[in-house]
Image 1 (cartoon, helix red, strand yellow):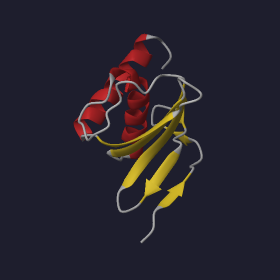
Image 2 (tube, helix red, strand yellow; image 1 turned 90 degrees about the vertical axis):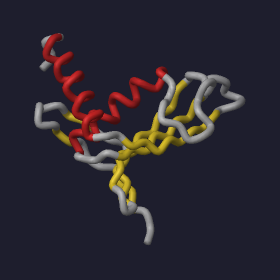
Image 3 (tube, helix red, strand yellow; image 1 turned 180 degrees about the vertical axis):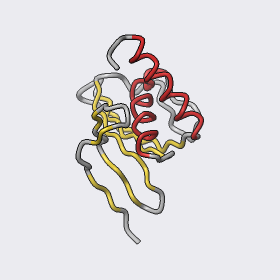
Length: 120
């Protein structure tokens, strides 16, 4: 039983926002996949199982949670290549699970902010 991965086409949210996840992974659990490349340092990244990722990843997690909410999934896979020192790139992979409440709260926060800024 293999893993299926696809790069989906662009989606449209119920609010009319176009979004494009990097991957949708099917392997018994459907999960959202995002791949990031950054000049940030990998310093402070967890190397063991944890329930908390560093604050500097919040922008990626907020995006993923919004996509997960719209896709109706509660699991994610975040791959990051940290290239702060080009001679020593660091690769990290995180399996993430959110509760439906976390996804709903994130969605509400983002949509309310967009409305307050007049962009939605």
